[in-house]
Image (cartoon, rainbow, N blue to C red):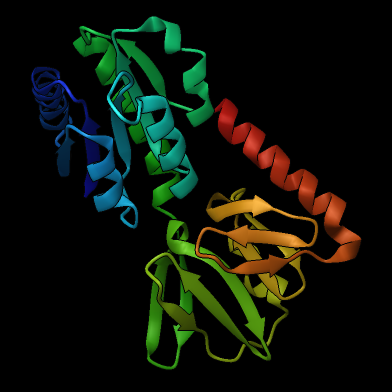
Length: 244
């Protein structure tokens, strides 16, 4: 199910945007749920640990403006799709800190909002449908790529650390760690910074001198001899994601 958040401190604007989004959902025959907020703090409190696909955010709001809110959402979920709406076009340049899908001037034109939502949905479909099959002692587990934070090889098994907090352990593998994760590592979001680790770069909090700190709080080391290569690959990934 597609999850969409709309945040606007003006109730009339909030309801107008919801009506347009409802129309878009029906016209595309999409199963979706809309969450409405008139204050950024409540949004962050309720959705910090939930997967939201699309955020439609007003920019001029009290306490925390939409630019700050978008930056915080981007910190928590690098893959979130953000659409800004505003009466203030002068914020357009600042908004790019959150890498938005679009920047729409109120009153929102239906066609422009629909185009923005279609772009967001196309990107989501490209990235959310992929899964990785893991054989465990309990049976076969199918894990969506976007739920994997990182993988670690421990002896002959592989541990998958997920966004839900769950840890899935594979059965013993015969091939190398790299070969076992070959299909996963073909995805541009994943990288192997160390012989025993692979990470989802969308889940990175920061890159340090010795490795990655992930949003889960875990630390994953980078092999010293491959540090420059891994750093450049990560920076290229971030740059391409921001351009997109």
